Amino acid sequence: MCIFQRILGGYLGMTLSFKGRLSLLCAVIVFVLFLQVPAGMGREIVDMSGNRHTLPDKVTRVYSASPPGTYLLYAVKPESIVGLNFPLWQNEKLYTTKQYQQLPVIGGMVGQGRTVNREVLLQAKPDCILVWCWKQGAANKKFENSLRSLGVPLVSVHLESIYDYPQAITFLADLLDEQQRGEKLTRYAQEALKQAEQIVRELTPAEKIRVYYAEGLDGLSTEASNSFHVELIPLAGGVNVHQGEAASEYGMEKISMEKLMLYDPDCILVKDQRFFKQVWSDPKWQVLRAVQNKRVYLIPHDPFNWFDRPPSFMRLLGIKWMLSILHPQKFPLDMVAETQTFYKMFLGVDITVEQAKEILEL
Image 1 (spheres, rainbow, N blue to C red):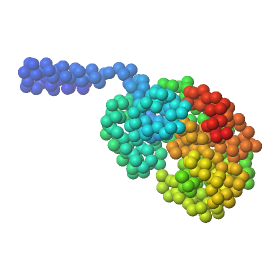
Image 2: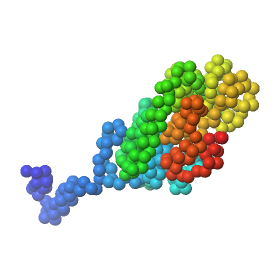
Image 3: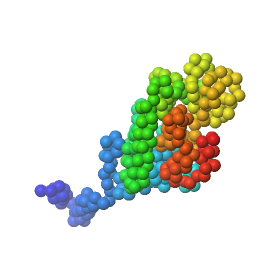
Image 4: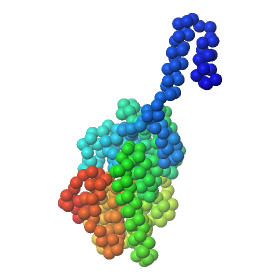
């Protein structure tokens, strides 16, 4: 006897009025019809952590709980984004669509805040929520559990390393039915990583450039060599002068000027534009060989940072930029033309030579 017959028999065998029996019979029929909804009403996916989810056939509305996921959604299908993680910086308004700039701020797993406006998120009605899967601590798990209570599928995407990007792009392209675009972006990502590997493989230890990553207004915050925040340094044939284990996931470890003088790096990468303007006139920094040799570089940051904080797909262009400044003889790339190509491909915008030079601080 099938489950339908058992349920129906049980209900009809109850001591009820005719009207009551009829109501129960209708309820059972509706329940069974619900179980037999055609497969076309939804689809099952497996996310990058191996979790299964049932989603609509067409996923058109997605919220990402962290900036790396939001930025990758922008590259694959910007119109799918239902909300931002934080108000946009001025540079993020450059080379992005008006629709993106007008999205509501929902919040997310950002820095040390980790807050979400649940009301705005529910009003956005996402088909799913992207969560950035990486070396998660207790705070991240707690954050995810709070999202899970909303009843919206939490779809995991791996973006811990730049090497995750080819697979992550393909995954999101399949999720959003943008396979043709996904293939194009994935191919660029794979070729960029392969190109960097080839160049670094041919370098001798003496040819690897000693690099210091300067963060903060005074340039004296940095990242330990094992931090994902400085992943691009070794991938571009550099050696991070600040060796060791990261003190925390957040990073931005403070060091003294005396310690930096002992490091005396060959090259300095600068995150903050205000510090970059000061470094050339600050007498304390004049003793460093990188300053003396004019090998201090402001990391491009339009519309999203090319190197770090937050990490994004822009690092695929950032690794080429780093190769061009660390090893110009071995990687004589026309970065102006490459920037124009990348912005067209990943951001969907045409930029002029002058705009590309401005982005590159040339």
